[in-house]
Length: 210
Image (cartoon, rainbow, N blue to C red; front, side):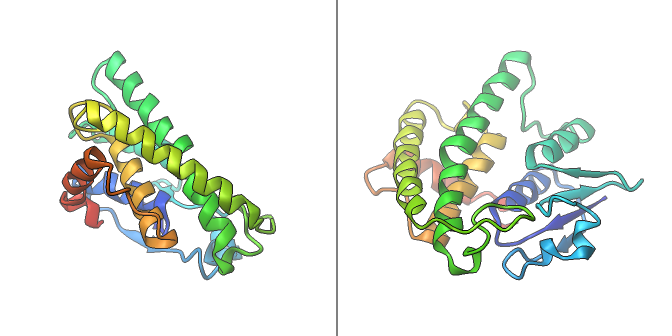
């Protein structure tokens, strides 16, 4: 297997962290989104959608979509468990994982794609050119404020996003927050002490450096 990766992008990083938690020695091929390498013919032959990450299996099968890749790795390498061990736990983790995507990842992506000049003609990920809309930055910023409020409420009640242990939901949340902090200068509010506590814990895991 090998992973088509992009160091700066949150979705490939989600898979890298997942792989690191599993302890899998998986080779990676860097594909620069900023340089448009994902839109070049060489990569489009691998994934015509032009999106990352992509996992290529030994038999040539190609899997895209972050959670689908993680699901495959979870099924083939079940320990440590990151997506749930019982029907209720799997449903709970998937629910919170989706919260982190819809409330956080979509919001920060809206800010990044519509404010950073290199994406001026790539307001949406993919092969079709879509002009950035600067007015959407305000909406994304407001959505991120809502995300920070909601995750603070959740982490006031639980140690980790989906319950009492580290899961894929924490991986997504970490990548949302690091993208917000590093690319659009939107840190965790200082008053969000529960989120700050959680962030210090998950950032200190070796996998966070993947």
